[in-house]
Image (tube, rainbow over the protein chains, first blue to last red):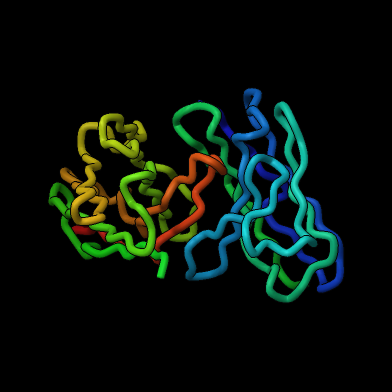
Amino acid sequence: EIVLTQSPGTLSLSPGERVTLSCRASQRVSTPYLAWYQQKLGRAPRLLIYGTSSRATGTPDRFSGSGSGTDFTLSISRLEPEDFAVYYCQQYGNAPFTFGGGTRVEIK
Amino acid sequence: QVQLEESGGGVGQPGSSLRLSCVASGFTFSRHPMHWVRQAPGKGLQCVAVISFDGRNKFYADSVKGRFTVSRDDSKDTLSLQMNSLREDDSAVYFCARFSSSLAALDLWGQGTRVTVSS
């Protein structure tokens, strides 16, 4: 099983700041098979990024994804109030299709 | 409208059974693999069951293997999860989600249905 470790667990930031979230895999994940989701309190997750760096329909261009091998990153260039949420990475390279533990981005 | 709608959640005692359903609308259900993903209170996401587009291949998380059964009825655009021998650690919100093979990601999620297992 591929274990995805997200860091940090929580980030306290102000609107307008830039943020970088990390997702580290215990084994290599092919770039087409790494996705990021955003989840707001009480809501279902929403696909943000697929294939490591492609924005899903409706994802603002302030969101970007990068990485390869075992290290992947989600960046938000300038935090907007609606971006405060929990972010999860997920891999589809090998079953089980594991999620990371999530990073909470909260308002400072 | 493209959507997934879950139902069937509720409260059960340890050892009991529940059946979750997920009705798809607005897209060709039969073309997509489907997932059940759960989220325990205050916790992260866990993929518990996957079914291929044709229903021939199924995957289960170790924690539910032998107790949960995923199925689909393409004539009714419905995904199901039969949950037997429920345990307290099965308590969670259960989401159904559509897998997009072109994106290799879950691109459509239902709103979730809550399952509580308690004595």
